Length: 184
Ligand SMILES: CC(C)(COP(=O)(O)OP(=O)(O)OC[C@H]1O[C@@H](n2cnc3c(N)ncnc32)[C@H](O)[C@@H]1OP(=O)(O)O)[C@@H](O)C(=O)NCCC(=O)NCCS
Image 1 (tube, rainbow, N blue to C red):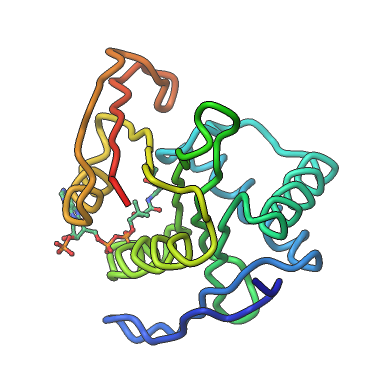
Image 2: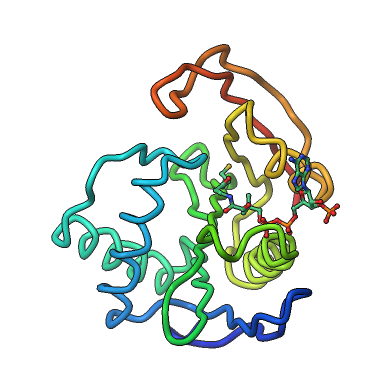
């Protein structure tokens, strides 16, 4: 796997041209702005308004690049006009769980509900099949009050296997945290 490699490019139903590619170190400022915008929005991600420092983002990006190079993660950035507008990936667990990968996905507000998420998920699974040797099961957590994501995951073959009632805070309020999996 090559850093920066473009794995998919197309135009959305609404006419937006986008690229999916592996990250590069110079994505730092763009991905940092992206995560802070999403955190402020308090959408369905674990950052709920906290500010991410540039130093922490650098550590995250360096760590992801290292894992990608070691065959322990897939991370695709959605790029539009040279800016990061989405991220999705799978990170492998370790030791007794080394056959399990954890999936995550997010898109910037202006790029949702346009079919990009479904293509991105499919592309990440395809890349994972090629690059994550030990992967047998993909798992994810989803906010119980996020119908768009729940539907998308079901459509792509994920099955619900658990619910931690009021297990996650959305905009400060506890909601169910649902767990889903898909066999590879
Ligand atoms: C979840 C997310 C990645 C999905 O990507 P997306 O590009 O918006 O999704 P798509 O457009 O590919 O598909 C959305 C599906 O949900 C459906 N949908 C839209 N609004 C809906 C609603 N209120 N209830 C149920 N389904 C809905 C759409 O019709 C579409 O289904 P279809 O393709 O069968 O018509 C994106 O919305 C996002 O980043 N949201 C914020 C962060 C987030 O929720 N991350 C997931 C964390 S688990």
